[in-house]
Amino acid sequence: MLRLTRRGFCEWMMRAGVVAYVTGRVDCRARGSERMAFPTDADAAPRRTFSRETFAILSAVCERLLPRDEDPGAIDLGVPAYIDRVVAEPDLSPVRDLLLRVLPIVDRESRKRFGGRAFDEAAPIEQDEILGLWQHGNDGGQSFFQVILSLTLEGAFSDPKYGGNSEGRGFAMIGFRPRPPLTMSSHLHSIPPK
Image (cartoon, rainbow, N blue to C red; front, side, top):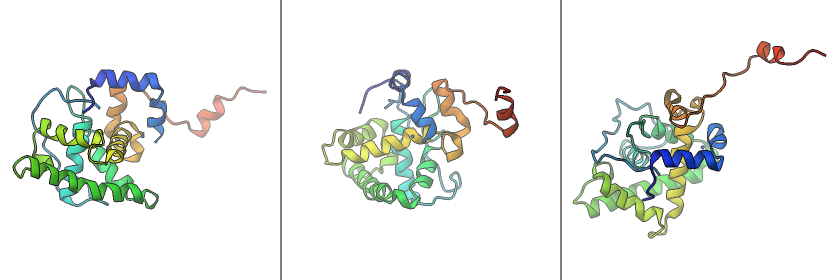
């Protein structure tokens, strides 16, 4: 897995000018080793794309890419639910098909390597081992890693109106403070008189 601190990653994003992109549409490594509790049916909003089992795998993958530490992780930011909603759109059917095909493969690989444990039950270091295969394309699936990483960042740092970045906490992590939306009267007051 890419070894980059959360602060280093955020600084890199700001320097690269990507923040403007992620606020319109859009690897950090966990410091701890405790396993994350993933949402159950009772915890999650109704899903549009993924089964309960596939949603648990998706949640675990997203949390490893953007883990909770002193800042919220992917699950805290509502990233899995965001991905579930966004890939349900008809124009994203290739992305949806890729995720529906690959997430069960990720789970099977975990069960094969780690004594029958599902990916969402594996230890973080074990999850990293499997994701590392996808990240480096050893299995021919590098496009999956790039897609899931992009969707995770998009869900964490995009405008909350799209369903991710719960309560704007992703914005707070990178120090972004959006301006309140303009109203017609505030817009008229900002136009200088002729």
